[in-house]
Image 1: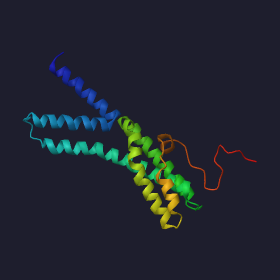
Image 2: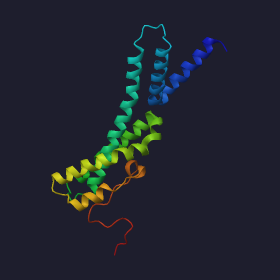
Image 3: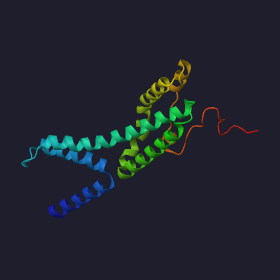
Image 4: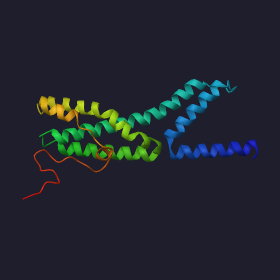
Length: 178
């Protein structure tokens, strides 16, 4: 195969990667730019800053994913532990919208799926602290409850699935009704 044919095949693969997973494409392109900078390419390009900016594109997608995960967990905590009635519909709506946004991100960049469970573990403590601060602000928190809340993990299915905690005072779904 000629050099031109190989180059054409590589470009087609890169265009396909760009269309199928922009995060994986951005990471690959940033690596390629850094490699080109190390080999002193004769192209008049700012290789290192180009690589940095393209690498930042992948970071931005990850950051957006983390933000949505954090928001979901924060609102799940409030749904689970706040006795307030009025904001519950808004919290559920926020969770549903964030789940849709995450679905869009993961569809656009399937490589992000690999790190979702780890990201959930990484953002949970901060999201719980924000929820506790919100609950404290409305006098809905006691010190014992905050200890329990801080120990509660959230699974990927709870965060990204259709799960919502029962309203406080309602029996758990598995409890028998009279």
